[in-house]
Image (tube, rainbow, N blue to C red; front, side):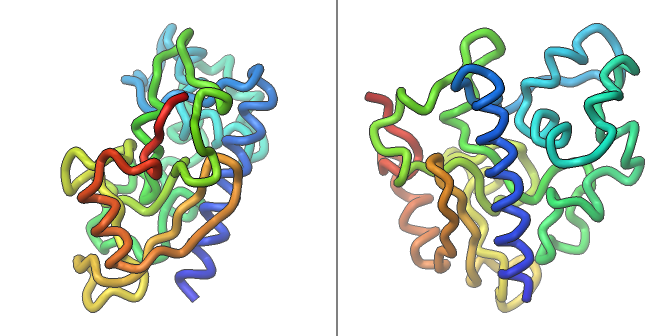
Length: 197
């Protein structure tokens, strides 16, 4: 059941990222930015993946931009709980202010310098977003806190011996085994992480 729910979550998030790229001339949203609770950087925050997708997925968010507050803090005072950003297999002490799914660090770019799908050698093999530890908004091989997390069906809430849900740049979803996650986490040069043409 958790795999089915997580697959649905990831599919919705990936669809929202894809819609963002259509609305922004092929640019992907950025991976992370320091978003103040309120202030003049709010419009910049709208290009960060979890803000951008939130505005697409949840009603009323687009109308909130004038409040100069990130949507999560205006509409969901408990953070990502009860949203598609929180995995059904998230650890019990998982932070409610960090999504359970993370965005490929290769796509991070910066506002004004965002990456386009056409830059990537193999969009069908390159991860867009996937299950992560919940300690970071970014997905990469750099540390255990940013790596793929095979949490679904794991032997205990903190083990990584279950399955992980992955969305690829061109839109398809895949369930990876713990062994496949380990191989990818140990191989930063794999096309999975993003190779530009």
